[in-house]
Structures are given as structure tokens and as C-alpha cells.
Length: 258
Image (cartoon, rainbow, N blue to C red; front, side, top):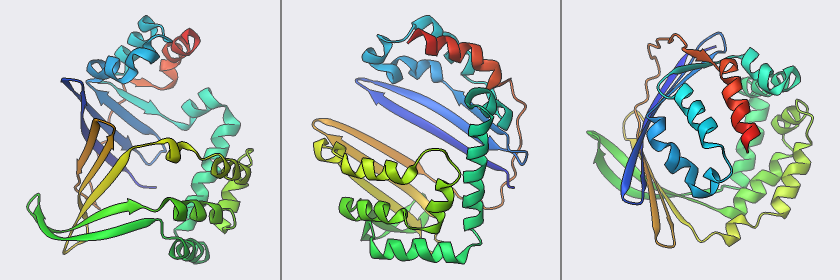
């Protein structure tokens, strides 16, 4: 029922080049989402990589990028139906409604809280007080406990929220979790080291900054987010240049070229 707006400026370093990507997301009360991605053309080749480019028709890809880059694209329920079918859209609305109901369902809230207390998969280390972006903050380092995360995921199947969501969709979500946990070899094969730093304002407890570092072999990737939380924003809903449905031709041409 609320409007929202999210803006992000992203820098991606690939080799000796640094690419910039700016994106804005606006949600309106009529369930229409507006997306604008600027400077996408600059990043397109870096995003694809040589392997992906071998499978795509470059001309089709460039036409889609050109149609999106720097333009407001609207995504409505009708657009989702156009691509995924009406039944799929009804499933999505059903799932969304279950999460909305969670806000007032104290029983489901307690169930999830108790499950997390039993399997706390986020380990927090306090690093002290620091001044960040002009604010007094508490600095924490967050690490994940893989075994506890698996047990938490396994326990989700018995919660009321999960069962209600499972009833919304045709797929057997519980079976999917079992198969994923049984065949979860990605973390064992990965040699990546990940660190997450989090700074929170000492007085109002708003997030001030996130920093995620991923190191794998000799490659180092760092993601930094300076956050500003506005709980009562003024949102200006943009006028769309195109709708997702109007991009269907370009998207279909790209898919058919693979």
C-alpha cells in the first residue's frame, strides 16, 4: 500500500577498467514498479563476459540494451501476465499476501523467531565505536554459520508461513528444499572468503554503511553501500518511456538467439 524509491550508484572494476551503473526503482500504490538503469551500455560487455557473448546474438543484445538504457520502464501486473501467464501472476500475488499477513500474525512471528533462536546462522562480532559519514556508529562484523543456516532452512518447512506459501504455488517447495540441502556442494567447492562489515547509528539504530568483501584466489571484490533511511519519503512517480510488454519483441529476439 506504500510508495517507495531506491537509488543506487554502482562501480564495477573489471581488469584495469572501472564501469559505472546507476539504477533507480520506484514503486507506486497501484502495484506498478518503475525501473531506470543508466549507463547500462557502458557495462554491457563487461557484464556478459566472453563466454556468454559466444551464445548470444550481439545485435539483439545491443538493441535490448539501447531500448532500456536511461529510460523509465514500467512493470505492472498485466506485464507479468503477458510474460508468465495469468496463473503465475496469481501465485505471486498469493505469496505477497502471505508476507503481508505475517506483519500482524503474532503466532507466525513467534514461530520464526523461535526457529532462529534455535539456529542462529548470523554470528556478530562487535568492533567498537567509529565515526562514519558524520555519525557515531557501532561497528559489527557479520559471519554466517553454514550448518545453522541449513538447519534453519530445514526447520522452515514446519512453519505456518512456509506451509501457507507452499499452498500458493504449484511447485513442491518442501521437496525443493530437501533436494537443495542434499545436493549442496557449492559451498564445499568454493574457496571464496567473504566478510561483511555493518555500521549502525548509535542513537536511532538506522543502518549507516555496509561493506562486503569477497576474496577468491587472487581476485578481490568489494561492495560498499552508504545508506540513508528515510521513513517518510516524498516519492515522485515517473512517467514511463516504455512498459515491459513493449519490450517483449526485443526480449524474445534475444531469447530466440541463444
